[in-house]
Length: 137
Image 1: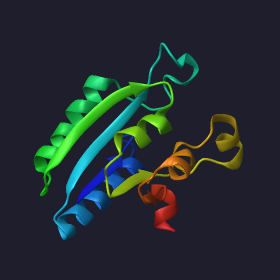
Image 2: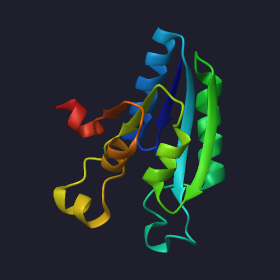
Image 3: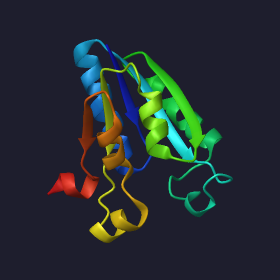
């Protein structure tokens, strides 16, 4: 069994990673740790929407993988359409974990929701972890 967790390395994204690793441990599954950065050349208006450089993200995910109690692979990539890249990377996975950023309706309308787009397009079941502040309620 293989799980994919797409994280933007925010507190909510980190919570999704923790949930995916816990499920993987319980099921004896392996995990693909995925981070997608908007390509600044292809989508300059959104280049800071998904924080972090490719190298910094890879280093952070490799540290998580090293400390994980389950086998993990790391994939960090750039893309014009982050949701499409997440769906493509998760092909062949049994579950896909994403997190919600807790954006307002206006913010989702203005920039769209990556989690929503992933849920609509993914062939694998999607586990959408709530925004950290929402989870605390």
